[in-house]
Image (cartoon, rainbow, N blue to C red; front, side, top):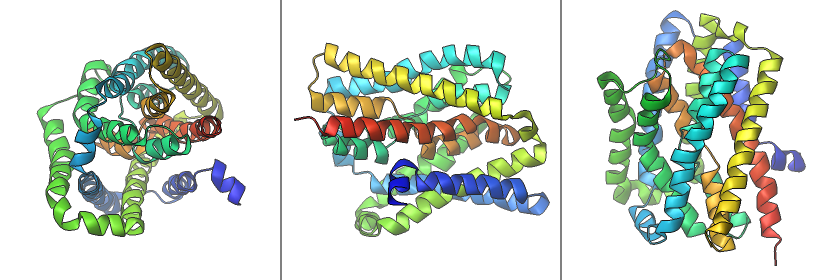
Length: 320
């Protein structure tokens, strides 16, 4: 079991269980309305905790290595979206429209925070720079991801940057995040001391969002569009996307003269995508019935990046 836990993220198993629960007992009628309200509260709570946990000093301390930060930023919000457009153009011919759209959407998301820093540490890389890059990516991603969605996602997909969506983003993401930053001097110590409590709230919020999204998809009948062949194709697309980005960030870092420690931070921060930010954003940017298909590639990519980066971190970590 210990070996299994090293290779399979227990949280992914919880996510799969939540999907199974939604398939067997989807929320309908009054319960669907209650689930939607709970999701709104959960997303706001999630980003409040992000704001309360993120130290402003950590952001400013990492900004001195501007070349590294710029490289990670370009990988996350320029290179990834560009290859995502190519993947979407191909996927649109072989996958259902919602899943193909989800492949492009995951390419627009910010990097992860916890796993990027953890893998950088395991690989003996530049941890302070990784902390800054991952934190900045999530902070900036709150604005850039919806803008990229409005710019790159096709018209008629349901995504955009209307005044209503801008208000939803401000009320559910930006305002709670700012409130968390303001409350950090009062509750930051408590949150750092009680990591298990905050982790339960953090992950529980995502599980609730996944349940509501997949329930709505079940009621709307969208899952009749997905086959095992579709899932295999999504895995293949994700593997190619991840492999290309890791290879480019690794080779590019060496060509640009970065140290091995900086290269590690660039590879791990520049090649990952955040499910914690992506699923809540999807519930705001897309119609409810489409969300379950759109986040499917992101959920598969999440596990794949953990597998690949775990192996890569170990290989980096055993160097002299």
